[in-house]
Amino acid sequence: MTIKTFSLGGDLTIHRLGFGAMRLATGTFDGPPRAPETGLAVLRRAVELGVNHIDTAGFYGRGTVRANELIRTALTPYRDDLVIATKVGPLPGPNGVPSGQAAPGQLRSLVEADLRALGLDRLDLVYLRVGGMTGPGGESIAERFAVLAGLREEGLIRHLGVSNVDAAQFAEARAIAPVTAVQNQHTDGIGLLAECEEAGIAYVPYFPLGGGITPLDTERLGKVAARLGATAAQVRIAALMASSPAVLAIPGTGSLDHLEENLAANELVLSEEDLSGLRG
Ligand SMILES: NC(=O)c1ccc[n+]([C@@H]2O[C@H](COP(=O)([O-])OP(=O)(O)OC[C@H]3O[C@@H](n4cnc5c(N)ncnc54)[C@H](OP(=O)(O)O)[C@@H]3O)[C@@H](O)[C@H]2O)c1
Image (cartoon, rainbow, N blue to C red; front, side, top):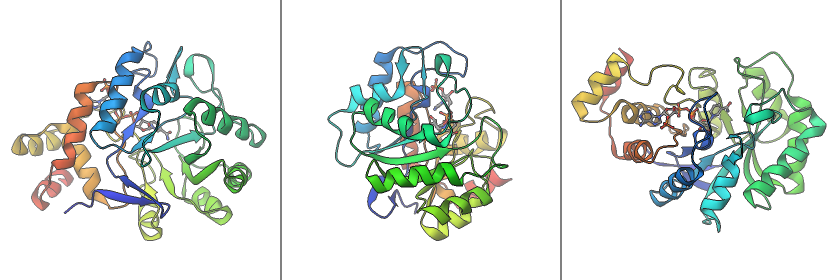
């Protein structure tokens, strides 16, 4: 049976099926802003249906519609068990598109901006998000991660994570301060999963449904979904949850229907036959 919860950093119990907030403000990377009322309704319904891990970032937004502000408006006063994870690293650019990486000296102000936007005194989990849209690797993250470790010591951050990192960067971070979660692209850096599992670190694949970049559905998924009377998205989420107890799923959507569909995947049990059908 798939274990449904994960102990983040050893002191925050979260449901492994969470919610990614990037799609609240806009459906595509160059699309128009979405209606804030829908984003608020999606967030409230997500929490109502049991989500207590929301993945967000100060740079998720389009125009005046900002994910963090929607979260604060929809969900304050926050439930005690709600865990909000944010990311710093990318510099907010025009119209919500990041414009390069923050220097170490700029990270504090990004963390403080997240605290203000979310209306919190302390952030539960802050990832250092490294690099641009390409794969991980190629630069030291020690200086930037050390700044976040200092903010954690000060009490502004509870737990630290790293995002879009390779094995060397992961090791660099772990030598500086405890790493509680790794967030890499679903298809990237799966090599880090075994290390995360062993160390009790969460592995949080982004683009769990293909990110609107690769097709959500495939022939193999379609066959398993048809057999189970489920949708391709549900099978993808259930397969992700079955892949390791350290994996947290954060499917993103700005649609109430998709949200309900995705969260219903919690009840979907995949057999060995289903899983081997997916592997081909
Ligand atoms: N660390 C990083 O660098 C990084 C990068 C990207 C994302 N993230 C995080 O990861 C989360 C998940 O990634 P993501 O939102 O980009 O991609 P995703 O979860 O793989 O897919 C979201 C896309 O699939 C659509 N979708 C969602 N549910 C669906 C369903 N049941 N049926 C059909 N289509 C569905 C969404 O459209 P609708 O909105 O119209 O439903 C959206 O286009 C983000 O929200 C964000 O929190 C992190």
